[in-house]
Structures are given as C-alpha cells and as structure tokens.
Image 1 (cartoon, rainbow, N blue to C red):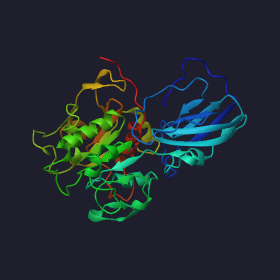
Image 2: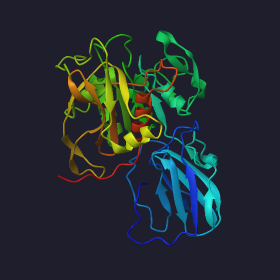
Image 3: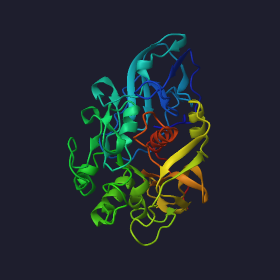
Amino acid sequence: LDSGPDGDEPPPAVATLIGTVLAPEGKIPIAGALVYVTKNTPKPIPDGLYCDKCVKLDYSTPYTFSGADGGFHLGVPETGTWKLVVQKGQFQRVRSIEVTAGNVPVPLASTLLPAKTDKANGDTIPKMAIVEGAWDAIDVSLARLGLGTVGPTGPFGMLQVDRSTAPYDYYDGGPGSKGGHDAILKNWTTLSQYHIVFLPCSWSDQTTCDTSSPALDPTVQKNLKDFVAQGGKLYTTDYSYEFVRQIFPGFVDWKNQTGTLGSACLSSSWDAPASSPDKGLTAWLATQAITAFDVKENWTAISAVKPGSGVDPDGKPVTVTPKVWVEANTQWGKLPATISFEQACGRVLFSTYHTEGSSPTMLPQERALLYILLEVAVCVAPAQVN
C-alpha cells in the first residue's frame, strides 16, 4: 500500500487519532509509515518473495503518513471499533482501537513497529537473510532497532548479536547459521523465501577484497537478478561491491575500477563530511539533533552513477537512474556514498560505508543507513515509460 484516495472526497472526521510510530526499540522515529483504519482485516503480507506494487487506498479508508518525528494525526469519520494498521514496507502492526469523538491518543504499544512476526496477534516483519561478511555488522544495527539483542564483543572489537534472539537468518556456515553462502545464493527455493537479503562488506575475506567471488557464478547472478526483479531488496556495502558491478552493470562506476575483480577496493579507508540531498532523510536526522555528520571507514568510492535501461514493475522499458541518498565531500570532490536503484519489482542498495559495528553507540551513518533501508523496502510504482 502507498497513498492516494481515488479522487472522491472522504467523509468529514468526527475523531482524530494522535500517535507516534517508533522502531521496535521504542525511541527511534519512523518517518513515512502508512497509518490507516479499516473495518476489515487487512490483506496479509506474503510470506516470501512478491511484487509489492504501490496501490491506492479507497477514498473511504482514512489514512495518513507519519512525519519526520514519527508523529501522525488521522481523522476518522465514525466512532466505534476499528482496526488500526501501521505499515512500513513489510513491517506491519494491526491492533483494534476504540474511536470516540474528539482527539484520541493512540497507545504507543499499538504503533511500535513489531520486533518479530506474530501473525496471530497482528504483527509481521520482513523475512530477512544476512549472508554475513567480515566487517559490516548490519545485524548489530538491526538489533539496535529492536530486532534482536546485542551480545558480547567478538573478534576485531566487533559487537555481536545473540543469534538466538535474531528474527532473521544467517548464512555463513558458522554456529547458529542456516548454512554457508551457497545454501542461499545458489538455491533459488531458499533465496525466494526472503524479502530482504544483506550482502555486507567483504562477504568472506577477512582483510581484502576477494580474488574470487560468488558474484561471478552464473547461478548466483541469475538468482540475484531474479530475486530483485521479482520484488527482493538487495543490500550491499563497501568491499561487496562486485555483487552490484557484476550482476547489475552500468549503473555505478567506482574509483580505480578496471576489468580485474576487486580493483576498486582501496588499500586504505577514508572518512569525510557528508550530507543528504534527500529532504526526508535530512529532516529525519534533524529530529534526532543530527544536522551534520561524517561517513567513516569507507574502503571503496563511487565515482559516478549513470542512467541505464531497465523495466518497471509492469515489465515496461524505462530508464533507471540511481537515487543518491548520501553525498560525501571526499578528497576527490563530492561523490555519492549511498545509492539505490530499482529493477522491475525490487531494489538494489549500495553504500561505500557501513554500520561500524565496533561503535558502542549508534553512529549517525548507521542511523542514515537504517532510514534508507526502510525507505528502499517500501512498495514500488511504475516509472515513466520510454
């Protein structure tokens, strides 16, 4: 679901629901969440891969979107019992609410994004898989959102998540994982069970870019192309850039790239002041007193993003131009640092920096990536046809 009554005017409101949408941990605001009420049971979110096309709500369905601070005001035309639905991508919470005339404060327990899927009680989260790398502790960031519990420090000073608490699956061949990388990347039946797949920095090598990569494997290439085309969201960072360059070529150029695998991996990292050209991200960070931030420990650099040929969710040919979410004032000039682009029903996200799981507190760049991840996970709309 996305937005827009079908042109008819909704009936006047007799009540206003007032509340705030927050992350499962209860403090981080969720911007742009769809909030609506209905007398009917909402259609369930599919368990596996699907094309999440944006659809317009019927004019008779009262709806709104949360602001940058997560707050919302929702007018309701009738008193009585309604189902309140809060949704951001595949995060959905459904709760009954008794609407009375006037202003109605909504309990926070009804508007927190859920921490796990419990469909019997009205909670759904996206099904996610982490094909774990060496350096980007995306699971720590997810746990800081309330999706799991951060455990003790591991190798190289990296924080770790207690995997028994994680509402997502690991594929690294280690304890608590569901198998090695091939168990998901080469197995379409497994891959297609997920809504979001993370390929974080340095998918296996501990120190450098890989000299061989599953991104060159024809089966992996086909599976990930099909995963994105059919609605999957693919998250990649830094040294795992070959998953973008090899499988979705032409949209992104990296500094120092040649025909050699791993050529764009830099021998030393860079930090730089950053900003966002996206007004939504800028406003959201400002609600958390972040008006300026640096991106730290970048080990690749995007030199350019370029338009390329693609198809929209209806299969029609379109020109796809990557969206720049974060720009960095690097030693080479202002360069994109986080980008995403659509392919058919899905999206690909790439960032030169990652979440820096050794930090005891959530860094601004970590917050920015989590915001972008939630935005990338929302529905897709047909683009303008060539």
